[in-house]
Image (cartoon, rainbow, N blue to C red; front, side):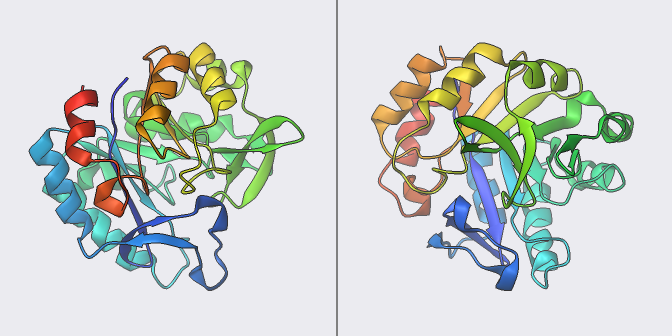
Length: 258
């Protein structure tokens, strides 16, 4: 179990948002924190601490007027610490190699792989051809509906008909190096982790997985450790003091750095 840092970029700024509030209409999201630091500043901080495997997420759609500003921030961060940070947001087989060349260690993909609620295995093959299995992270962020977790796409706005279960995790692990899973229904709320989802990830992930969502206290980290059997990594957003929260970044790094 290790701490994976994050850099979320929305409307050209590093932010922490309530995940479930994100919408492409008017580029809106409920904001928990808007940083005065740039994405590059955070990348340099993570480099200083030796924190690898963190993720940069571009939260605006590719056709948004803010996407280029997001991309500029991300590129500066990737160049600040080459081959150490992952990046997601608008990744396809056609542009994945560009982000690797830009300095990303991995590309993170969701929407491109899930189309009309179905898994596009042909696109997974193309991604593997473009950057290799070892450079691909699949974001299986999900929401709960009718007592089941379903993959959500398009910046967490659209439900697919694909449940997150053992069969899916085993099948997709053949194509990627890691999973990233946001519990979207609690993302950015600091109301506690989703214990049921953590159990699913702990018991069924054949590759490394990073959990995000709802972390608000040190007790939540203990739950991740216990339920995840020390095999589920985690990222902290709004609850971290770097983003206006109360959990101390330096203390988390000291205890949970790989």
